[in-house]
Image (cartoon, rainbow, N blue to C red):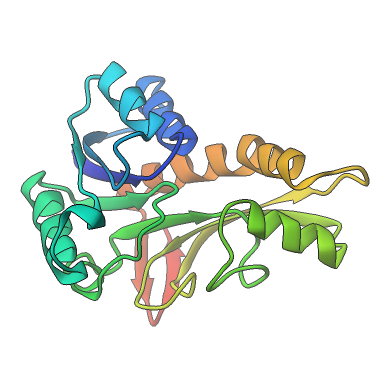
Length: 207
C-alpha cells in the first residue's frame, strides 16, 4: 500500500480528485496518510478532515527561519510514513533536503504543457494569462517529478486541452482542471502505486 502525503495551500480541488479516485477505485493500492498546508485557512484542510485524513499546518511565518520551516516540513512528512509526496497547489518552495530525501518520489501538477508557460513566476492564473496573451490554441496540464529546479523534473503524464476563442484565464483554468488535472494526477498516482513507473537518465519509463 502506497502512503501519500499531499501538500496544499488553497482550495484543494486536486486533493479532492485524489480522494475521489481512491474512493472509486481509480487509484488502487494507495492511501493518503497526511495532508499538509502552509495556510491555516486552506479549504483543502476541510476536504481532508471530511475524508477522515490527518492534517497538519506548517506556516513559514511561525518558524524562526526558512531553514527551520524546511526541517519541520520534511520531518512531518517523514513521520507520516509517506512513500510519495504530491504537490497539489502548494505555493511554498520545496527544500533541497526534501528533494534529495524523496528523489523521484515527489509529484507536481502544473497547468500547462511543459516546457510552455512554466518555471519561475508561472503559477495559478498567471499561467493561463500568459497562454492567452500568447494566443495558443492548445494548452493542458503536466504531471512531473520534482527536482531542484522549477518545473524541470522528469515528465510523467501530459494531457492537452483546447483553448476556446472567448476564454478568460478563469474559464481556461477551470477547463484544464476538469479535463486534464483531475484526470492525469490520479492516473499518475495509480501508475506509481502499481509499480509501473521508473526514472532512468531523467526520463520516465512506464511499464
